[in-house]
Image (tube, rainbow, N blue to C red; front, side, top):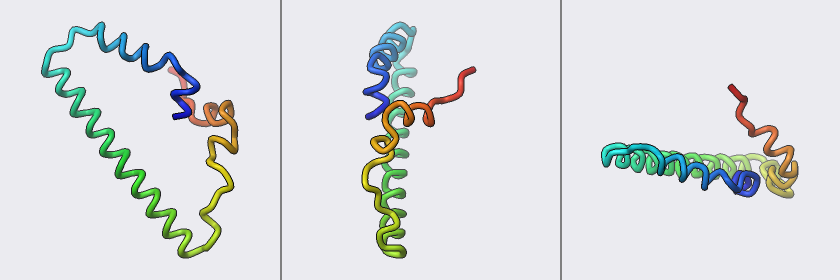
Length: 88
C-alpha cells in the first residue's frame, strides 16, 4: 500500500504500457496466469510470516511485537529508500 501512496502514477503508467503492446489472447492469458501465480505466492508468504510470528510469540512472549508497523516507524521516505530497487 505504501508503494501506491508514494508512486501514485505507477498503476496508470503500467496500464498505458500494457494497453500499447500488441498482445494476442495467448499473451493476455499468460499475463493473467502470471498475476494469479504471483498472488498465490504472496498469500503463501503472508501465511508463512504470520505462522513464524505466532511461533516467536509462543517461544519468546513479547519479542515479536512491534509498537507500530515498520513503514510507519521509519516514515515513508526511509521505507522507500530501503526498498528501492537499484537502478540499471
